Image (cartoon, rainbow, N blue to C red; front, side):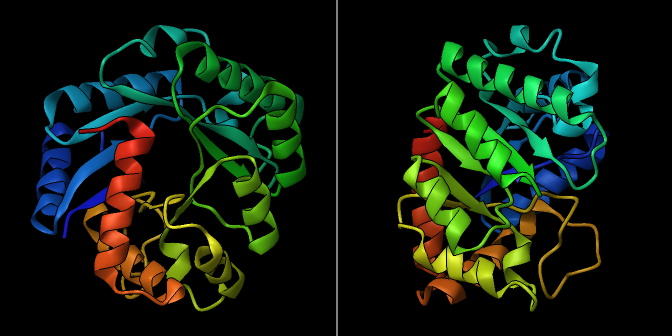
Length: 249
């Protein structure tokens, strides 16, 4: 089986990152999307994408960093290894940036996704209503994904109705996430992906450890159980969906 880790954060140390990529490849995880969360970290993602085969980068400003603005982000979006804008969005759980700054920076990145015709990677936490409102007002980019989707059936349907993809993380394996598994079960086969969000959110049975892209196979197993299909089906569907979403070959 071949897998794509749709969303991870590789280590800054190139030697450690090289080992993480190798470990993933040995588990059949052939492609990694290394996700930027600030202008500086997006640039580091691009450097790793240039160095490692099978690694691509996104460029974006996370809502935690919205207070710093997005100056310098746009110049990264024309880089050939940049496959998406984000992660960006709203996080009202931690409120590490003022909410008005979060909304402004999110809206500007939606606009950049339209301008550069790039997919949009969304982070949203405790902010579903405002997230959907901003997407509706700015226009949903043709390719949009809710990364680390944590909603239930209602939020899933709202995202799907707007043409978005849902990306499931290790949370789908947690015992206390029945609504998330219900969301995974109702998502059409051409509208979902899997991710680790490494080094965060290690799936069962590795929960509590530093996550790694190699374990996206465990996420896939959790999604397969939720959908009532064989894991090979999830591997094939998510591989094809990531290919379509990011334009990968």
